[in-house]
Amino acid sequence: MVRIKNPTSLQIKKRMSVRVPLGMITQIEINLLASGYNKKQRFFWFEDVINELFATPDYHNLIAEEFITAGTTKVVTLSISNNTYKKVEATVAEVLAIEKYNTDKSSIIRTAIIQRLLKTNEHLE
Image 1 (cartoon, helix red, strand yellow):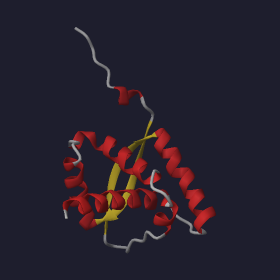
Image 2 (cartoon, helix red, strand yellow; image 1 turned 180 degrees about the vertical axis):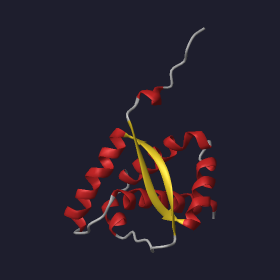
Image 3 (spheres, helix red, strand yellow; image 1 turned 135 degrees about the horizontal axis):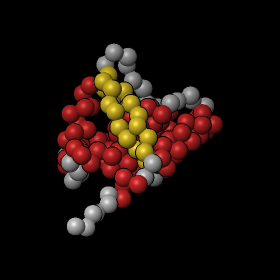
Image 4 (tube, one colour; image 1 turned 120 degrees about the horizontal axis):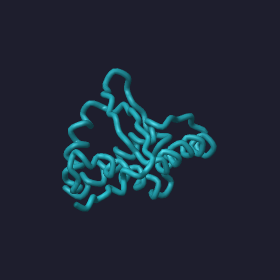
């Protein structure tokens, strides 16, 4: 019997919790499935979403403009690769240096999710 190894199981991963608006939860699930991922492949979806944000010109400005209203959120637990986690951490300092705005890792991930959902909605219209 040949064992097939999952290449992602060899990656170091970080587990995180991110607060997202309640209305966004359903949209995340819809986009995940529409993007060709199943619920067991959430890791890959979050990796793609976050790395898409980092590929966007002037993404620091998008993060600095992100805001969230207290009491209207739900916690989403996710896993991302160690490399992506380091990019997210570095971006916190970059946003402070470039935009003079103090942000956190959750804000960066929320911005990435919002940007993905906006892009998807543009294609549907």
